[in-house]
Image 1 (cartoon, rainbow, N blue to C red):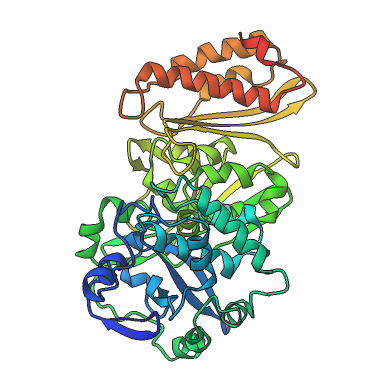
Image 2 (image 1 turned 60 degrees about the vertical axis):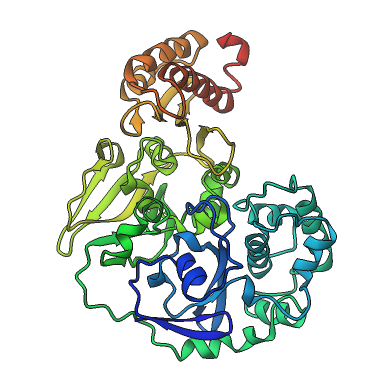
Length: 465
């Protein structure tokens, strides 16, 4: 039995925990303001807020209801567009109307919820942060100019800096942005049972579910599954970084510790889905999905990371480069779970580069992606790790090329020879994202981009023309 607050009322359902929230909202609850479009977490039309009570404080995140199973709604406050409506337009809705940001209206409800999520979480009313917050909301009508004007208007009218997370909800209520019933939500949630009562044998274990609930939504609705309940965690000490694989992608992006090691992470990770997807997707889920173009797989292979894998009684470690065995096949037994990711670093910040090319710059699966991490000793490659995705059946660690470059003096002719060697290691195939020849050429350009970024004192673009 799943029980939660839906807007201002308490609901209880004995539906399968795998039923998608979007379907419940539209068919059972008749809350059709939440729109159904892509069902892949890509467009944001179905966005709602998911609120969780922690130590007496409510924390809300915008989520795509097309990827949110009922099992993850238990004991939470789910807010659809109807839950923020009042007798009059609230300031967010009013700004969108005044600035011509609403035309057909199909994207509008999701857009309002994304902006509400921004106002609930942002440390300040920054236009840049507001743009990031709506990165997962697509609009076919407005050209986005009206939406941007509305965001600027909202940011000018609201000062979030004095509003701490503890009082943020109360402040938004007092400013007329959230309805008054939000003030009673913590007490009402505290009275709900905190565990889902399930006696079925678990068949599928789910991390973030941002891929599984795209590909297997119907199967998971009929299959007993459970959320992998592990804590997030990032620890950096003594030139070693340890990350719990349950850590969400957006947590990585916002980590001050990781930003010190890898300053570009803030911008590079914008290429990995939208904010709402990054808040739900986990490192471990990305690895186990075993996509040949998995962004996190490619990045952490370049960091020469290793995995800790555990059963109820034993643990083992394995290099990430040995984890991927074949297309969508990994070295993980049915009774095993990924626990931790570990990598060593030898300088701060690291010399690391991540590149990704896709049909859209953002929110898209790569045609080819690549990462490179190097450590220099003078003008010599002391360590170098190069990885490419989309050019083989697995995320490919370019072992021959790395071995060839290791210990050699950096010079243009050496790097040009390495580009030729790379072509002997890869085996791309033609698909909807490009021909094999295109992917070969693309990887060559990405590797040149890595060297121009990481070795500006040694090489220039002219060296590769």
